[in-house]
Length: 184
Image (cartoon, rainbow, N blue to C red; front, side):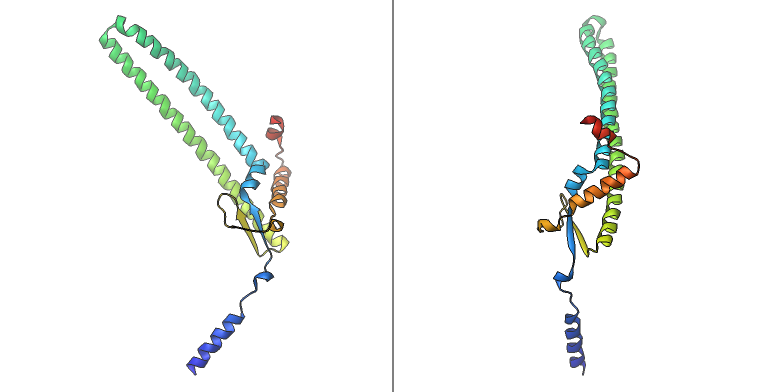
């Protein structure tokens, strides 16, 4: 009786498999979507601008330091060894502080831009989920740098549709292509 019951359970469970043709699937090239996303471009431009500002500040400080080092070399012989050691140590310390400031600024920018991009990715995941439900997809796969689809027919590619959707939503939020339009 137990053997017959086990065989019956196996047969019933095998009959419950779903044919793969019953699924509606699509994929999104996430790399391409991020390249064409106005919001992602705006975030990138924002942090490029901040990086340029910080770089200008550091360059002016580095130039001042460079001039002082040249003057130091010229005055080292005339002002004596004690002055040269003190001034050399001072200049070396300022150079090190400048390097630390540069590293700190880079880390700060990377952290801030990383947070914004992470929140953008979360936002897009929600859009993908809502879009998939609305269109009746069983699965929406992602391709790109972190590919989870190794092959798919081009007819399953919904990247353009989703790119238009995320850009339209971004524009509807009141944020226009100001920064990208001015660059063109």
